[in-house]
Image (cartoon, rainbow over all chains, first blue to last red; front, side, top):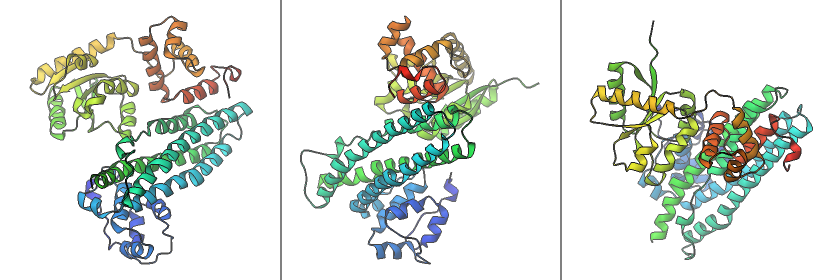
Length: 232
Length: 201
């Protein structure tokens, strides 16, 4: 964990490569904002300008991703644009569903290789149910929340909905993922290969952290922004 | 030989108060602060589970108003420690009853130690399932949960009060780390507590 003393405030003049060196997990953020690697010595500002990404939004996301107790300043919040945030959240969903789940599923399948047919079935079913749970959650955000925010950005307002109704409830999703972690770590038969088990665990831990940051971006960036737009 | 200290975990947002309690207790011995958390966050849960504290001193201000009643119950999922509330905010009788004891910031050090001892003693009287492995009763209840039975049905089936069933379920979750019914079902199947034919796969 990064302590207060080591904290580096990300600034627009920082080289993008140095940013990644501070927190390599930000590689995920780059790909979700369609920034490809190969950016040479370019600074954050230069890359954002070239890609048409709002600089404040980018810094906000990177800070939240890197510092556990980061609270966005009102200044940064008002300078960020909701469109980039929504795009980021939407692309994250797509990444989770297409890449993350496919990878996890593959790793799980490899891991239960030596198990008997019933055990394989049990694990596969648990994971399939979890996947459905997450898909349902995302599809609510994709079909209700994001269109509502996009309409607000355009200046329209659907009176039938307000962001207040968007009560973030990830707890079921978090609990199920946590259960999967416990099962893989503690309760699968010893015939499962430890290295393959580790791969699954690394993936779950990383995914768990990613989801947590995702929720923070929704709760402490998107919702305050939308509240402000609703007041207009 | 060193006498065994009782391990204390503080869950107190104010660093000043937390450090104050730590220093008061260290002067008197017997209780020693082994960890300080400033909130009840996702990351804190693992530390709670891990520390194996004897006593937790918590400032109920860490919970927002709505979760104050359920907050104490959630702690029990992570730790079997006696839980003492630090009265920094007004608490009604219902809230006080949730804790094994309360201390005030104006209590003198000797009173605090006496109250901690009393809380520990009163906590130990309540039936608490010991150890890390599931007891026979807990396994029985786990099987019912895995089969999809509701608490009321389990209570009737095992001839227990609903309250006892809930306590057992909390202990099962604390021991296994598994919270969801789906997860408990997988646990029961992998440990051959139930036959896969008895549930839908």
